[in-house]
Length: 107
Image 1 (cartoon, rainbow, N blue to C red):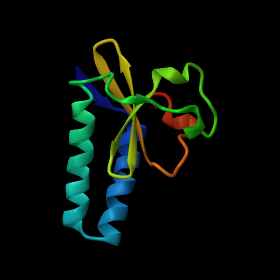
Image 2: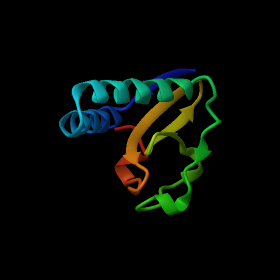
Image 3: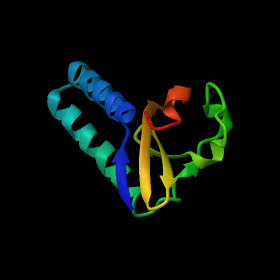
Image 4: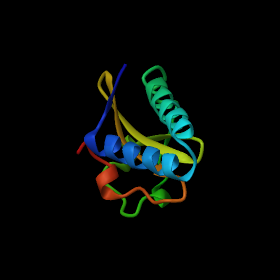
């Protein structure tokens, strides 16, 4: 399956990578970005291997919440949705953060 990143997910990824670069180093940030992209890309091979996002992880439970799946890359949750023969990466959030409404649809 082809994997596509929403503009929102790309924006969150950029924020995380910049934060890592500032806190640690550019090399660390580049490694994390590669890990995020590799983890997301693997969802295309095994689209239903990621667990359904538990309802307690949402700030507000969206309609049809069971359509949303998650995989982890270190302490980060990658939220995605399999749609037909595509995977839509919707958000990346630290696992201690709740998934927001804007993280649950393509935007």
